[in-house]
Length: 212
Image (cartoon, rainbow, N blue to C red; front, side, top):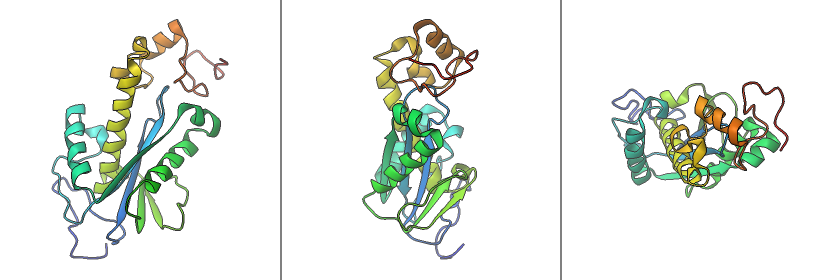
């Protein structure tokens, strides 16, 4: 790692930097495996002295922890942005392309242009002329990607709770659109909503995407 005067590790052993660039942006998404709702992504640029002992991959945190850490990130980050791609667009371009598009939109929304981009996973498309690196399980390795995972998850969960008020029978306030047994049962009983991803296998016995 370059720039040895940077703090390399947080207290929870997440690395602070990959490229050595001061304005390094971490990116992650939330909601790829959901049956309903948009996919949401976040981009975060953290200061070199950022410290949050509790920060971790969002999947390792409970809802209360994520919401508390979100406030810290949004207050202390040099820049952060969250963006989404709708379920209708997911059906058109597929979830991988939609996830990358959401990350591009999040990066574009940053008030500071990053010098380098690190992305959770192994798939990404170049954004403008900014160099990037994909990192498998990066949300458990780098602070900025972990921060992005928390923002993407909490903002998406917040949206799904709002959508739940329109369609309470699907329990989106609890399952956030993921394919739980109760969610599939509601789809079978009431059919899909305008927020469901019709290109997905909404029911286990379904062989082809539903035609509605």
